[in-house]
Image 1: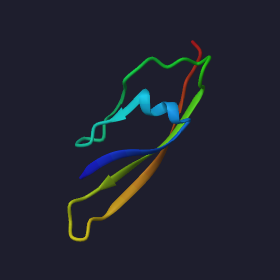
Image 2 (image 1 turned 30 degrees about the vertical axis):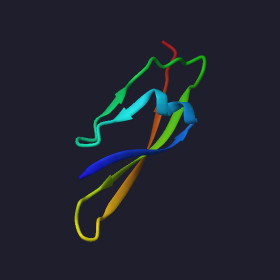
Image 3 (image 1 turned 60 degrees about the horizontal axis):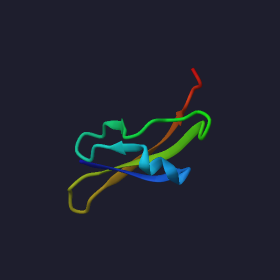
Length: 67
């Protein structure tokens, strides 16, 4: 199974959030700032290597808190 991230809202999330394509683990690649963006919405798609390949997805909402 391979994993990919799609449909970032806002698009700047691509620069801050990544997903390991082999494990699906979500990692931050930059600092989040509550003053700039309070919520990121994105989808993670999982696809197998079958014939034909099957896929599924989930929607995630990451809320940034001001602590």
